[in-house]
Image (cartoon, rainbow, N blue to C red; front, side, top):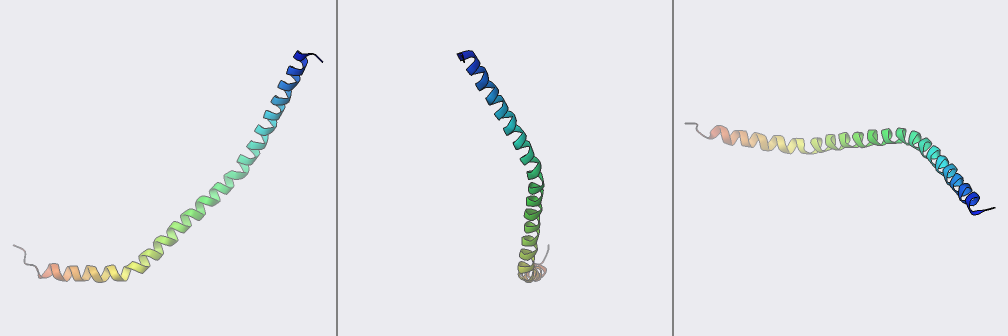
Length: 79
């Protein structure tokens, strides 16, 4: 085999390998699209749950403070 034939075979081998990797990667991308959607749903649900918990924990304290502020402000005369 001469050098040109070897180079040609190497180029064909690389092209086949590139095509194989490209096909395998496209398959993985298709599979990952659903996983990304699931990830976003889990992240969104976690944020909603955390927000609900935080509001539940701080509601009583903020209501009490707001009532006290309202009482103090109603005692201040407006000119």
